[in-house]
Length: 266
Image 1: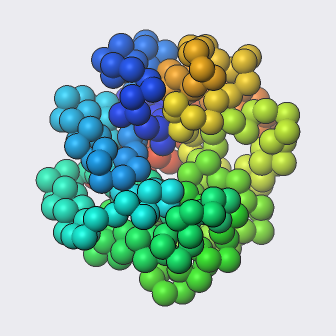
Image 2 (image 1 turned 135 degrees about the vertical axis):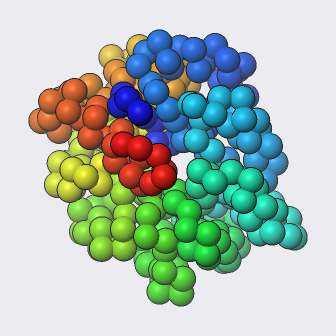
């Protein structure tokens, strides 16, 4: 397949973005060739699946339970997740993880949901998307209990270079979002400058993680992030990282396919 920008992480099913068809048309027109659409709870698995079925050449689905939604996991969700993954051979697991920035649900509730998703990823040889915020010690504790699958993404990675160097031997990839283009996030850019180039991915996390005004080619009301902003974000990030924009586009897209879809040609 030809290489252009690939969004390694968004929530295209989010109702805040409106009807998907014009959003996807705008993404294609802007130069986005594919995107990984992440669920956050079982209630939106069907919406992500519908997008994958309607746009099989564009949407790569990811089904999972976000740590903020861990308390909503209903009995038997594991079997239902396995069944959904069996229907979609390219699907990954996500968004899942651990978060101690929030007080509820607690890490005690989040942890078993996360561990089960890692187990399923390992058993089914599926890629995994991990959300981790202010929970690095619990994350490594989780890895001691259940080793992660060989391909996992630290989405919108906000950790230190020291944390990244601990994660790399496990097989971690790291996605950079347009949110890191804000001046107050300069330290995050410095971390990405030190990462192996073959582990860097590009994401929007749309409709969240909105970039600065200068990198919003497709502004939305309500301070929302349009996923068609990805090429503009990519060019700005390439400049910050001291890389050629075209090479960065190809690099991050190839890395994304290597991480999530090894059966696809790249």
